[in-house]
Image 1 (cartoon, rainbow, N blue to C red):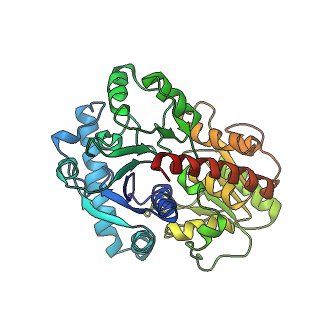
Image 2: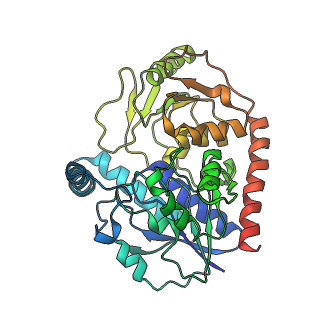
Length: 382
């Protein structure tokens, strides 16, 4: 059986690349011929904007200008110009490219929505997910992520797809209801997604693990690569969103543990780390895995920073803002493995460092892993 998976990838983002690779490897381990349908995401500067790819929520004139500047001009400059002058940026881009060449089977590339919809594909099954493929705030049409390009007779599955939000605008309810009805088997990554699917369609979606958690520590160990010149003990900061508490907590743990604090940049062109931290900006996805696995503690507000810490049994703290709408994916995961005490809310008193029972958590993850793989086996007919 041949399976095509469409998701968000090739955007120079650790979580996006790793979830794409994990999905393919899990399906291949189940005995299927699986590959990524290499549809260029709109944040990649190579994406060709067309009338067909207009976003669900219209942008203002200023928004359209900012879109062009950020995703076409700036991203082109970072990808094509800066690497010629900055070895660290060139090294990071090469590491991302090499990661997929080694680990992820890809189809030919589709640079525009018309290219995707006009393609003649021969997959038996089409899968969408995971990541925030159904986020209504995307700046380009997300219709492909409802598998509307796939032949009507083909089996269509969502695996761990995420809305990235807790609510859908009323103006989009009917659109989402229609698009979700195109998918035969629905699974989502968060309990909030289960509620949204129920409200939109009346259907019951299954809550499953993010695909990065379907591979265990040993399987990821075969993929990761050591980041050079690191000490045996260190605190790792992976920060995606602004926070005052997060760097302060990391520095305090570093002082308590008497080890240096490293700041893993989310962008290749990062210039400085917060005061007292050492900057890492050229790691690829394989090095990202190694850095989390070998850290004495990870302090993060990233979902995948949290998920890999849980999976590897690395002590961690997830620093969240109580008012942020995107917390559900982290809280849903930590609730499922009884690790809600690893959350530190912005402005709360900072905890003293502590580890958790990694063996107990591994047993809980394995049960959830079994349930999620059973979902795939059942819907694929295995």
